[in-house]
Image (cartoon, rainbow, N blue to C red; front, side, top):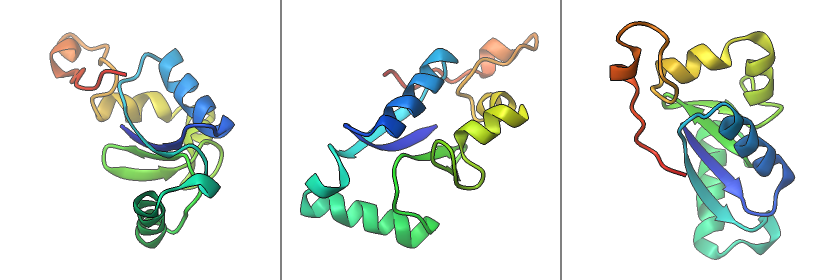
Length: 114
């Protein structure tokens, strides 16, 4: 799981809180404090995300290499995935949560430390 965030964004903070509460592993890439405070290289990253995935708003969440959007919107977004019951299976499949099966612990990546 990879998150592109703004440091001062309440949507970014809520996205991280949701994943932290679930004890999910993720890698955070803070693009800058907020959109109007971006350096030239950070603005270029944001623009490239827009070119590649059709949205420049942050946070931008990737699970298993797939863009799911932001906290509340996107394809479909983190909160809608949680509400539909699809978030936990997606996180387990991506190795961001341990699987409950007998061998699940061995499949858990645990790669990213917050």
